[in-house]
Image (cartoon, rainbow, N blue to C red; front, top):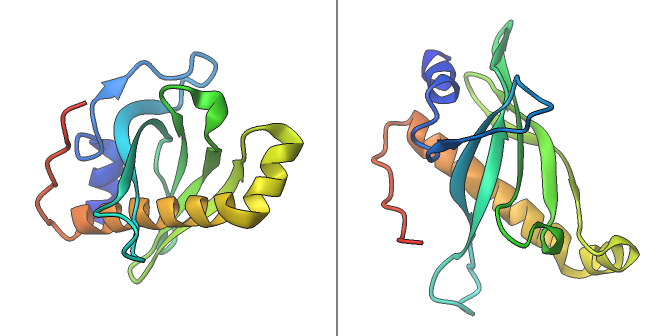
Length: 146
């Protein structure tokens, strides 16, 4: 649990810290790149999108650590889903739970049923995989130049 607490105290593994939302002083904002892994062979690698991730102050519970997280695109934000939730870390699991809002209002809800739900789930899984690699001490992957 100590490694998890350290990971959410020092966010350098995730990206450089930037100014967070003024209305939420308890959140720290990081500029990063989120991945959408492609595993069906239709692309050569993951689709990447620069994003802003908001991270809350870790809360230690008996046997678990809870951390509020949320993300949004750092450019053209109205065109991409926005996620808000939390990470629950125990000795045996990493769980990301929360909700996301698809873009485009009612049209977005229709698109969500076809593809955006899948995209959001895969992006969340990639975030958890990145966190797990950091917790296991794997070296950070170099981020591409923006």
